Length: 220
Ligand SMILES: [Zn+2]
Image (tube, rainbow, N blue to C red; front, side, top):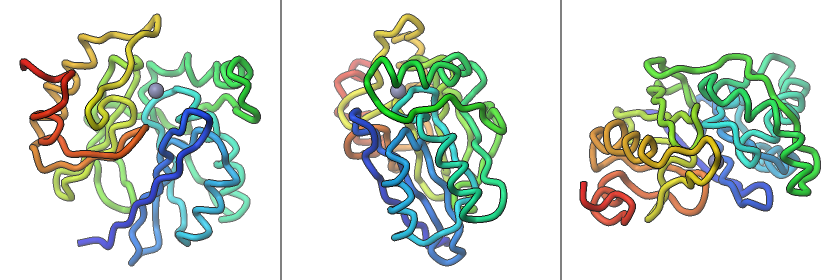
């Protein structure tokens, strides 16, 4: 088994969990959802001490994606090679194209639009810290939201789809509550109660804990 380590850095005024996930044996890892506060992310990377293979985005919201372009530039200079930004699903392109404007609206400095080096789609497999994770399309919070799941490791990264005791908000013009709940019920929970997840805000949990106690999933 890999010697997988993870740490989360709350970034932006929205306290979004930027996740660092790495294999302490190979020294290779991944940054998920660098929404902003790039100097703090770089300082955490210094402490963790691994080479970043890619930057992954679960969805196109500013607190998840607003620092991706700046982090990519900084890492490529440090590491001397390409650090691709991958994901989310192409259906979040309209959000990534509006990050700078959204940042200004919320008074957050330094957020930039980003064009991923590669869009991801459900059915693909992506490496996180050298381990295979399935890409699942879980729309509802945003149209192109992705989750990354390793059944072998019993670990998932779910962004703003599912939280401990809550689910992602859907009160946006493009939000879809029914699609969100369907995503959780039909794609995530069937993967098994034992899967622990990291999420975009607050502490993580497990699919089993949420299946049993999450009020937004009651009655199903
Ligand atoms: Zn979001």
